[in-house]
Image (cartoon, rainbow, N blue to C red):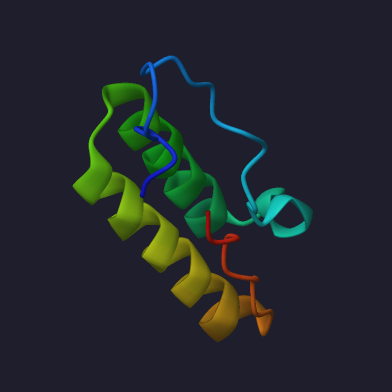
Length: 74
């Protein structure tokens, strides 16, 4: 299941993402990856959305030494 297309009537607004907000300021890769995620959600492109989320988690782990929690399962 993806944030951009959950089951139901199709009307959905993305909840506050588990974005690296504390690192976004001044970190160009964080800003670019967050923009990719929001664009993918807006375009309803599930593949790009998952790719952006994976890239954000990988970037946070490798460059900031922070492990982001996985989103809760439905």
